[in-house]
Length: 115
Image (cartoon, rainbow, N blue to C red; front, side):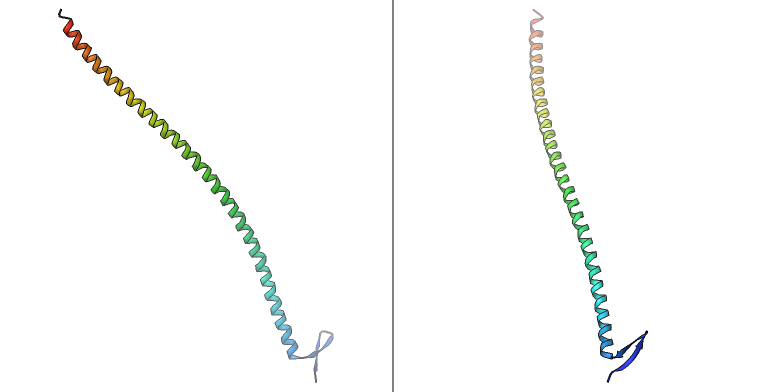
């Protein structure tokens, strides 16, 4: 036979099994609520990480572009330096040849002047 207990103005049957089920159901609802909050927070963080990843990808692409442009510029500088060095080498060789001709001409002039 069920005993009755008074709760507020209503009288409820006293049943330890039902009380236990109610307590466990409350705990289960609390756990579900906590999991739901965790799910919402996890989705938010996941969205933030996705946005951060997109930003990092954009920055990486910009860095690749800058690196390629710098490399192309350095190749042009290298080509210009090589061309300048080759030109200076040619000028040096021409100057040496001219200096030798001048020396040879001086010798010829020195020989011709006493006459």
